[in-house]
Image (cartoon, rainbow, N blue to C red; front, side, top):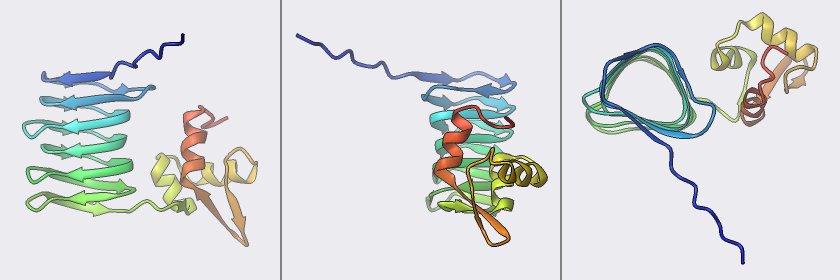
Length: 167
């Protein structure tokens, strides 16, 4: 008889003041309720609590903000701004949900299924010339249409997850 082992949900709660860069290679549920200064890269779910303050760039899949965030936010799946959210900076959501009362001071660039060279450079935070060089050399999954390139976001996400950036 085969038994399926229940996978434990990986939850991290940060209620303290922290500084630095955090990168999660495996999916987690990260909740920040204190003060965080630095860059965050999260696979899975990231929740910024209503009493939290985050200063830095955030990359994640599902991001829910209830507190204050100052920096660039790249939400590969969904970004939700709760009524208590205050966001200063640029946001790059695939899907966006803004509750009444939330404050966004900055610019919003919606991510589409296909990205241009310029959008991909912003999405990956890599210079434009490197993107063009990698695409031309076949190191980056893309489609050339006439004189321009387009990149499928899901293929790019898989390429990044496989650790092929810059190789």
